[in-house]
Amino acid sequence: MPFQAMILAAGQGTRLRPLTNSIPKALVKVGSKTMFDHVAQKLLKSGAQRLVVNVHHLGGQIVDHIKQHYSGQPIYISFETESLLETGGGLKKAAHLMIPDLPVLVHNVDVLSDISFTKLAAFHKKNRALATLAVRNRNTKRYFLFNDQWQLRGWTNKETDETKLVHNQPETLHEMAFSGIHFIDPILFDLFPDANRFSMVDFYLQVCSQHKIVGFDHTTGQWTDIGKPEQLEEASRLLNHKR
Image (tube, rainbow, N blue to C red; front, side, top):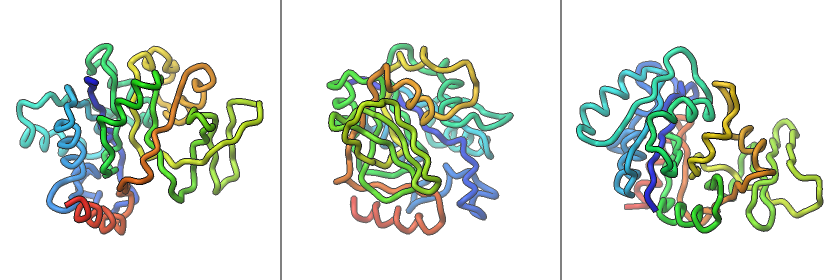
């Protein structure tokens, strides 16, 4: 299925300091390539017809990197110069740069995995979902809650004991951790709130009672995020495993 992609690269990378004091998180290297290169090259190889990248912290370095290494590639930049807009706001601001009516694969720049974008897209199309969230069974503080049909029904934070449910009727719910990768139907843009800054997690919880938001389980595959310096070692192990 044809698709385009958005790489979320505007974060300040505070947990990766001091590495990110002088370079943006997207340009921190994992092995021989930057985080951005790992994600962008996989997306382009998988057939993404356009990449849109949002930038903020030291964003000029990312722009220069793209100009130097991706000349002629369909990559567009969305600048969040004044302030960070969170995941939802960043996607909303970048909407005008996207190909109309083409599904969007949204990917955090600091996530590496062996997930098949082709299988994710096919799962999304088969379920006729507004959004498909890549999730896995792993230990974390926050979880999405899905019913037996893999439809989103809520969210919980184990650290604060906060839980948000969107349905009152009793049903079995399964805790799954979000992987920072989601596939969305372009209709979703018409449902965005008026606010310029908002979280996609909050947005999904607001719309999932009226629209189909589903989970795509890729627990059996490899995955890591690179939020802390020690996680760079884990990412390197993942790359060695893939080789």
